[in-house]
Image 1 (tube, rainbow, N blue to C red):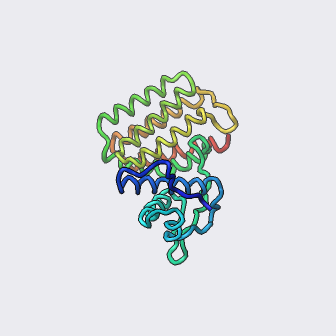
Image 2: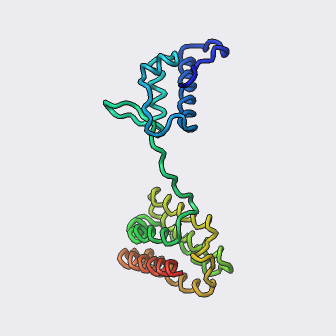
Image 3: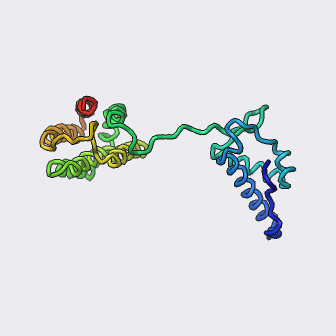
Amino acid sequence: MLSTVMDESRGPAPNIRARSEAESRALYLRIKSAISEGRFLPGTRLPTERALSAEYGVARNTVRKTMARLMREGLILREVGRGTFVAEKPEAQPAAGEFSLPELFEARLLFEPALVDLVIERATETDFATFDAALAAMEQADNWAAYKEAKYALHLAIARASRNRFIIHMVETILTSRRAAGWGRPGGHHTPLAMVRQTACRDNAAIVAALRARDAATARDLMRDYLVRTLASVSAA
């Protein structure tokens, strides 16, 4: 059983609102600590608001506010007619660098070909200048990391030209994952730069040319073909 929330040594709160806030925070910390330390296991039914109010000597409204906060944070669940329960712990999500290269290209294949429609509708001359600069950086890169940075910078610039923040976030997440992995390929080796740079520069330049011409069908096909070939390459490595 949890110990009493209020610590009389702290003295009276300066006003009713401050006292309510202090009591709510104390109750919140007690229950959260009990959950995180395993004293309240997942699935445990918690006492009613009335019981918690009596046990800790706080107002029902204070208990209600505390439980609402715990529920917003996903620590507890309320089921109508049954009561309040400690939530099951969610499965750990992979960190940014834990996605495999094939997984990332599969995801890109699902949305990047369709992305070109937004880019064609919204891209400005400034965007195309950014595309050209990224292509030039790809061609001039003298090491693997610089080449990969430039190539992903191009695809991030294309995503940004869509003016869709969610899509931009997805591409930024992919970029973060690849950086975290040190731009590595399956098997822990890099393909010699000269073997891939010329083809990749040609393919990406064709994509940019189709975008500049506002040719959605061609741009979609080129983007899809490029990603399919790259996925096949990394999956076979």
